[in-house]
Length: 188
Image (cartoon, rainbow, N blue to C red; front, side):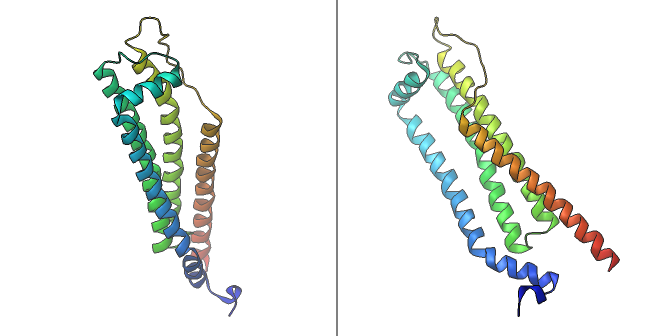
């Protein structure tokens, strides 16, 4: 029996079975990524002297006299940035779960894809805002450091934003497809 001879429900089921291993792999990758990122953040920030050297070198400032309150505030900014990134992992998990439970071309899957795209955009923007905020917090105790807070981006930010917007665009396309299919079912 060919795929062309299957009905719409059977095609959805066949597609869901073909995607099952990939959805589980994607879920695992999302989980590994967010755990890895969390461990990396905690490990790098738990050694305060190493953190001062690393970030001082990155920003070109002397952080040897960094007050504990500034350290805590900077860690809180990074933790908030991590929480925003975690939303991406949550919505990847939910989207692949919608695929596994209901199929790819469903209203629920398109809503989860929209949420994933929006979370991706939010995560990129939070990351871009965190860098200058970190600089401002970490240099606050220095008299000669410029304290202007600017948003800056690197090429990976543009790539990540492009991917997030691509997911958002596909979510709108899938939603339109679901709506067209629903209208078509009403006429048959």
